[in-house]
Image (cartoon, rainbow, N blue to C red; front, side, top):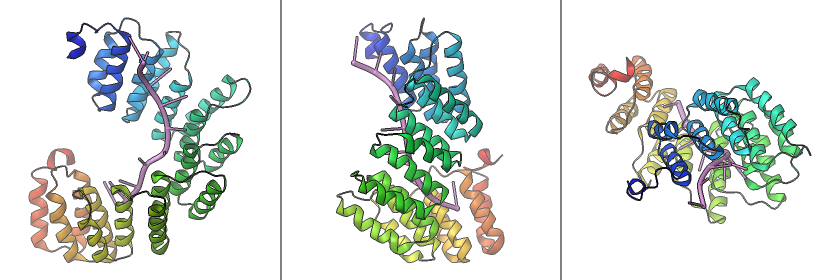
Length: 317
DNA sequence: ATAGGGTTAG
């Protein structure tokens, strides 16, 4: 509104900033509307809309726009590449990622890839399951900052390579780089999947030693880990002390653990906690439904079915 | 003056 009042609608700085703002807010239609109305979008307009779409998971549209941009005679720069790599990582489109890597490699003459592009490449390869290629890109960079390190660490965590992750974590510190909240999240993530409770506790202590307070993401990892190992009372104790209300997503995680440990009474309680969340989605009811056929009482079957009739019905159908 | 990297859980 202020931009209109100040008659700045045609101003490229204002317009590009609007596109950026709307995509960051998830209002892709608004962003697209503004972009479409521009007479001659510049590279920054294109990059804003491409990165915005990729960030919001509109991967195919991001890729199509990058193609369209090049058809209009604009060359992709590093920022464009990062946005496109993000879309490709989201899609786990390995072959496409390989082609982009080749393109990146040939476009820089002295064979030194931009640090941020390299980080996006490492992330893309990890998401596509190609740890070896991720390591190759990583090793070739003579300057490695903490985000590049973390992108590799996160890749190890996502693929469940706990030993590699702990080694790389030590190596990162040996190179003089400090772990961040994201690094610790990856470490806790891998502990959760490997069932390493004691390691997780000591990681929490180390975190605090670095002056990093565990946030909701770290604590959800701990809750997952406790539930996985059947320590439900501790899991609930952590949940009760969270600064914000748990979402249905963490409840459905616990529900999955209830199933694995065959604890039906708890499942029923968890079910009630989760459906009180206004944001609850159909995925939760699928988890509950899977488990109810195994051991949840008929009474809860009725509750479940009445829920299908309300909030979940449209998305289930 | 506007655009780019790593973030958990079923």
